[in-house]
Each structure stands twice: as structure tokens, then as C-alpha cells.
Image (cartoon, rainbow, N blue to C red):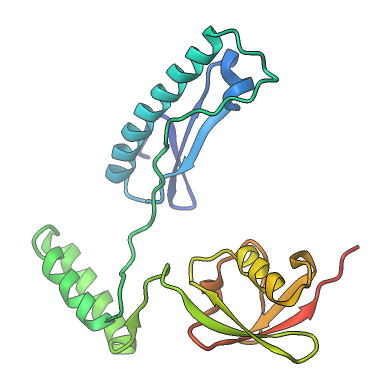
Length: 217
């Protein structure tokens, strides 16, 4: 039997929250509050749904207050309620993968059942055998890369793994004077796509990007 959580659904192994706003408030708030819960775990998803339900109630109450002031739809109102953003757990810091794996196994041994712990230990041992000495890098920690423009001139640009490629392109545009919508790049023999993250292309400090022309129809 599939797990059911009110105001949440599971798609591609990830839970997403969606709750529709009252009809009379949609001119101000939009149709619904929708947000990825960034987890495949039903227990974690339920806890985050509770948090978002509280925020949903706060948002609706504030919007009702604006409506009571006879605001017109043309007036721009800012709702002051901050909605939490969820992130998948990551290992942070410049520390060897083997060290982080050992620490995680110590913690996991206290909360996992023997069968589950054995499976996790096997997976981590396999990971450590391949990349045990590698450093786990903070995806928000910045580093410098090189960008070669169409004239062959090299520019140094700061970026980080979680940076959107569009934001990276805007930095390159400021350095080169080329409108960012006309920019495209190749790195590690891969075509860089707008909408993805810099870290998706396995780059790191002192990595080299090469600019190519983007065709605009």
C-alpha cells in the first residue's frame, strides 16, 4: 500500500508539497503554495509538511488582512511570511571521504537495524575503496576558474559548485562585455547548459572553460 500524506505527493522518488490557496486570495497569492520537500523519506516529508502548513496558515491570515483593507488586485502587496527552503543533506568541508564515511557509520550504527546498517556499510566501503582519499568539497565554497573568450584572451572568474550557469554567465559577461544570452561554454568536453549548476560538469579550481558563440534565432 502506497504512503499517503495530505498536501504532498511523491514523484521521481521525491516528495513535493502543494496546497491550494482560497479562491478569493489568488489574485494576491497565486494558485497554490508548491515546494519540493527535498526528501524521499516519508517521516521527514511529514515533518516538513507540518512546517509548511503552519506557514501556509500564516500567509493566508496575512493575505486576509490585506483583503480586509479593501486592496485592489492592481495594488502590489508583499507577503512578509518566510517559507522554509529544504536542502538535501551534503558532506561539507575539505575532509577525506573515508573520514566522513567512518563518522557517518559510527552515528548510523546507533539508529539503524543490523540488516540496514550492513547494507549501508557495504555501500560506503565500496565508495571509500574508489574515492577514499578524495576531499569532500563544500558546494557553496567559491573558487577561481579560467574562461577563454572568442579572441583567445583568458579571464579569471569566481564560481562555486551550486552556482546556476546563468549566474556564472552573467559574471563572464561583466568581464568580457558580451551579453550573457549570447554566451555558451564548453568545459571538460561538455556543452554547458543554462539552468544547470556549475558543479554538474565536474569542474574545480583552475579549471578552464572555453567560450563558443550562441545562435539566436
